[in-house]
Amino acid sequence: MLKRIRHRIMHRLQLRESWLIFFIMGIIMMNFPFLHIFNKSDTLFGYPLMFLYFTVGWAISIFVIYLFTLAIRQSADERHGPKEP
Image 1 (cartoon, rainbow, N blue to C red):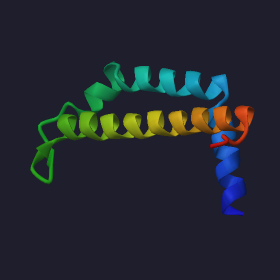
Image 2: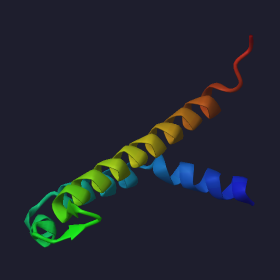
Image 3: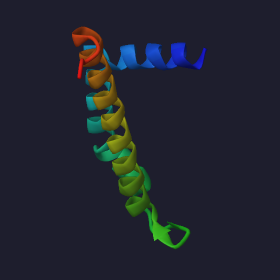
């Protein structure tokens, strides 16, 4: 069951719409309304909210790019079949 769910997620990440949605989401998250929300003098664990917003957003974007590369690699492996030694 877990393998089937993983396969469906990887297939979904291969679609062009998914790439476009994540790109637009990234642009929206870097524009005025969201930056204004986190541009406060409040701190969380001693760190300014804006710093945490950028750091967590950066980490999430790297994880999403990693998932996309896994999906591309899996797609390429399925197209070319198993490699012979």
